[in-house]
Length: 110
Image 1 (cartoon, one colour):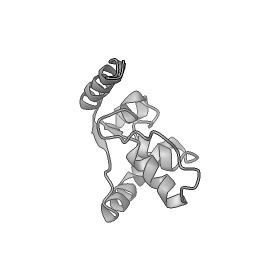
Image 2: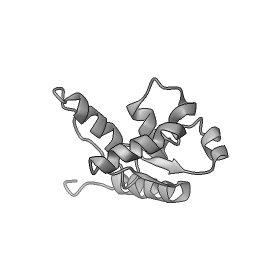
Image 3: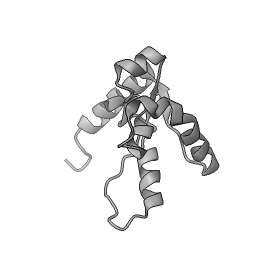
Image 4: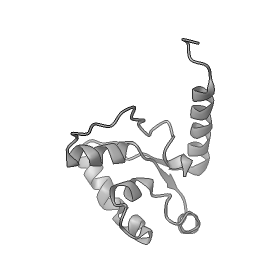
């Protein structure tokens, strides 16, 4: 599910704060994930893990419920002005390839 983790929209955290609050943990899960848009069959074929945001904030919830709770998660994101990262598979895939290419380049220090 690399298209749900490494898109241009997903924030990449370089360290974890051992003292983060529960709210900060949820924000990190939301901003560090991206959903992949698609028809119902697409979500079924991905085991509903195309709903990466919902998967990250509710890891113990059966995946078949993610689509049903997504509107509530989107409303919370709007309320708190948080990005709800989502996009079509082709867009997400190209962004991931771009990030892989970027991170595979030698650093300026080398």
